Length: 253
Image 1 (cartoon, rainbow, N blue to C red):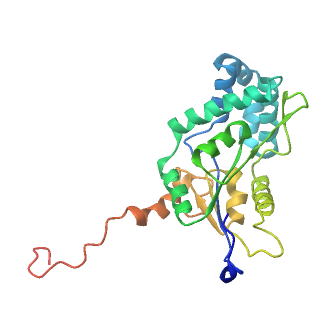
Image 2: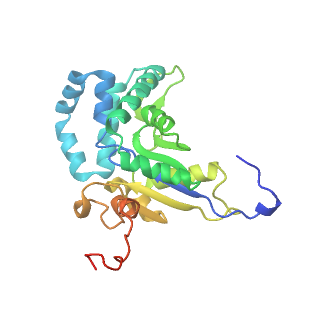
Image 3: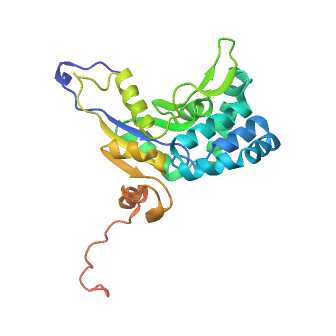
């Protein structure tokens, strides 16, 4: 980071763009594909079938019910693995997942923020073991994701270390990151926050941002349809230039 000169003693506020991952940066969800990559199709299919009533309840109620189900699934499938092994598999999964499912229009938007000198962070309810390497591939400035508890011997329990990073927790984690990086506090100008998401779990973050953007693909049927769409932001950049009035004698005049 460059040092400010005397003429820059009162720099303007920083701008930060926070992007959700599943369904925003990428097409579709990543948790089940990651579990299959780590444990194999059959063990994951058995776990999902065995917990089907809880899965339906989580899908209907969302919120804490979804958090509880997700944690139980991780305990069932990931408990006993080493942190090193899970991190290694997470790096491989992140690379493959982005190669297959990265949304080009969102990648362009990330690059647009970078060109403006903005900071970019990923904030996701998916687990840090593969969101962190995904952030490295995308060259973002920070990664905020759900963490799994690891004991002193480096063994994963499957339980959350802290809260599932969704809903209000997403905004809380962004604020914590801003403070940790000296971007928020009593002596700092108010950060300009952009937030991109696609589901109910992102609504709190988008509502708290200066610029909330619905990056979902369901339009008016989406959970965040009250926010401006990503497509509407891209439209001016892709619209052909106005040819202007026809020249004298032009058949179109």
